[in-house]
Length: 450
Image (cartoon, rainbow, N blue to C red; front, side, top):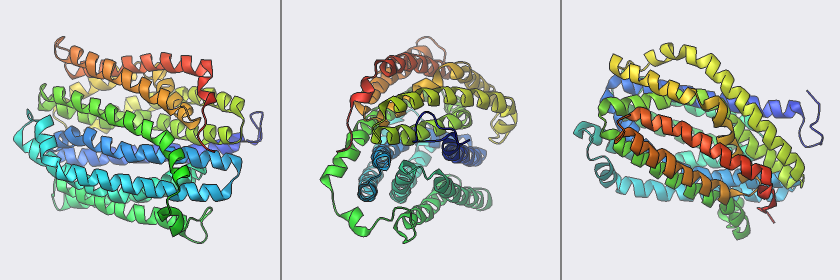
């Protein structure tokens, strides 16, 4: 396990010690998400439909400050590769400042405009669904402030390769969310407000503990109040250089997701509910692959920081192949278990059959195209090539998943299955685009830090 890949940057043992917590982290997040969605689904189809409708809005806001955090991870990883301890501390403080500021602004805007957004975008939905969607949007938006503390700390720890600490944080916040949801939804029958309340409590406690891990005296790279509140324009530029293109990509990506939701609404509540439940169950299949994407940012970022571009390229290729293997293994393990997993949602039979169709539509192209289309963009961003990744992702999203998805779903009459078919087509197109970029080596010519 101590064998080196031709360098002194990482051993196989070090990679495995970082990867295993990341895989457990992703599985934990998605399984807890599955269980909480199942609890909401057991309340009513209107509740799970409401959550599904506003999820793209929540994800859009969440992904913006998550993108800023991702930029921070790259900067911290590159300074770690250089061994510049003081700059790591400064970068960590600026990431905390940036994520909390952006989250506060987004939270305020979403709460103020919650009703206009829901009633304008999803006017065709059932009135009960729209009312629940407004309540859910307000509650989740409020939790973003607490979650930004957690995400900022997470970004720093991942950049340092401290994935075991990240796993402990994930377990803390998600277990609190799960047990509080069981209490509020199943015990007190608070329906959708129960999951909102549990989410706010979990993120408040998790965010506070995450910050404590960075500011305590025994922290690996202790940060001080001055690191957070003293603005370092040079460091913020480095963070935003990666984070802003990724944030814009996520805004338009989730905007496309909202458009997809608006025409799925016209297919009826069954289609909306099936899409929501299938998306929740599907997250289990790709959670291990997302762990590889996260690992790529740390590993390739540190290689770039150390000035070893050839090693960064080799790690990029190996991580894509590792992602393909893990995704295939996930399909082999979890697809046979789907009948048991889907029972948790207590969905009607007509909804259940549609869910199975959607999952198989996505599972077929997944081993071929998911890994390259999702891991290579992280490899590029960790080297500072954020613009190319973002622009190409946006073009494929809007042309294939939104445009072609609409054509398949409504004019061609394929319904929500057409949307999922286009998701697989999008993976294939992105794989070709990213493979050509990887082979060209142009992504290795960018600079992120001074």
